[in-house]
Length: 446
Image 1 (cartoon, rainbow, N blue to C red):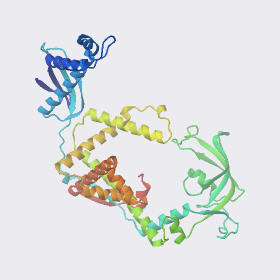
Image 2: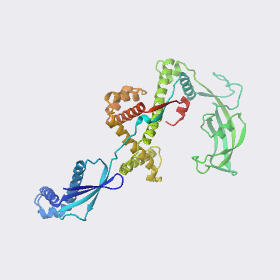
Image 3: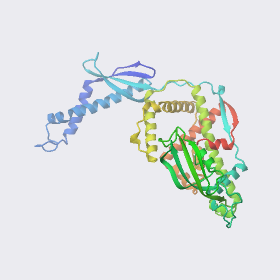
Image 4: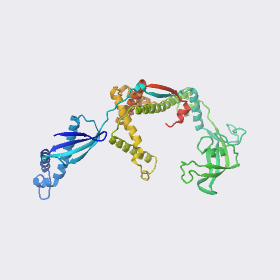
């Protein structure tokens, strides 16, 4: 069975397979005889159907099955003999010219993995970001948690916590109740009018002009002001347009924040109400969140650097497979958000750059792991499971779930391997240390 391998474009190859017709016919006959033992046909007992009838009924199907299996097996053997690292699956096409009469010939068109050369990592300069979590950040976080548990009281009305002070106007942190009406070119528009609408000033829930207009108003006062909707505003009918709004203040309430005491700590899940333990729990959670965000930033910095020092073609078939996965993931995400995915047609080229990056990086990381014997040991996997489970109420149960579920364990192993490669690259490259302020880090998207 002679084979010839041709180099086509870039990573594409063509391999010619020759299969003796006698081998195919022999295997087809063998299978048909087996099938004849149990074949059924009207007027015949099971297993007594004439062989010609069995061949006429099942011959074409059986020949296709045999041919497909033989071609697949021949391709596998030829690929191994030629030491080909095949990417994806081959495409088979019949060969009709220059074929011996006793042979059946096919072309197998496929792609191979490239040879990856990674330049000296010691020449890389990679920014490595770090962030400090101080007691000040813990206190600020506690203040945010207090605001979430605030109790609002009407300004000027005396209660158990006071009257909110002498200033009855709406200020940051106050909850206001307003009526508003908006007009564009003098005409009210859908969604531009509401009564008894509530929001807290200074939280960024409203557009800045709206928030600013309500600021300083007292009950009974009104204000008219222009508001320009952003071009990318979710309301398409008003996006990019300027409206004139009139708001009327109906109620101003000040927020009473709970004291940082035993009751507050218990409300946050500390059974004995120990405030110091509560602060430590909050700091631990902040440290975990900071670590996750820093890992993401530093990972991207390493990946960008690796892409710059690794030039090679990637198999188109792998990129297409990755596009399929990204599109499917996008559809699932839309479905989970309650969006009708059938209304959106995604062009495949939209996902091509992301898919190419994923494939390229996957191959680079694989090369680094192979060349430097980087693996995910049991200790590292267990440690990662414990780290991920630490923030849950029952860490042991979550840890065991990650370790014992095949899919989750595989995800853990992939994560450990990726982090090990990141650490390895930083150990070889020149790390440019940069401290990022806590607020800046937390303001970035997770």
